[in-house]
Image 1 (spheres, helix red, strand yellow):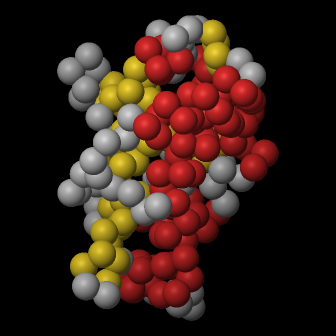
Image 2: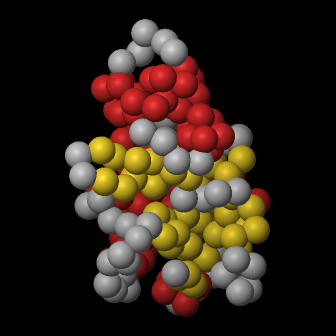
Length: 190
């Protein structure tokens, strides 16, 4: 699914927290039916010239938090943002210890490149890298792969944290949760 942010906002210069909250409401109203399986939801910034951190905080981050907080099968990511918008996103998420997926998406909706902006703590980074390497895994499998003193509960907490940020897809299979990259082309963050 792709949401054209310029269409939703009605402008190409996005500024101010109140305007950001208006976009947030429009995005929630547009969500529609929950997909049966995990899928990316791209917030397409291709026609946006500028977006301030306050606007992005009240719209994009609030929307991602809302969607991931309800354990949705939608995984929001910013798509096709210019360097200035990405710089604002970095300034917004980095001090919070947060991350956000940014992607380049083709006209046909094909994901061409993805990476996260922000900074993961070292254990989150290790977990993210392992899941990307393994493709799909569980907390118990990560514990066995790493052969460390870290228990499955700690691995599960890291995996759940990465899922809540929208970096990994979480699926329940009975009492077991599996995790996999939703953005298969993910690279190291900056």
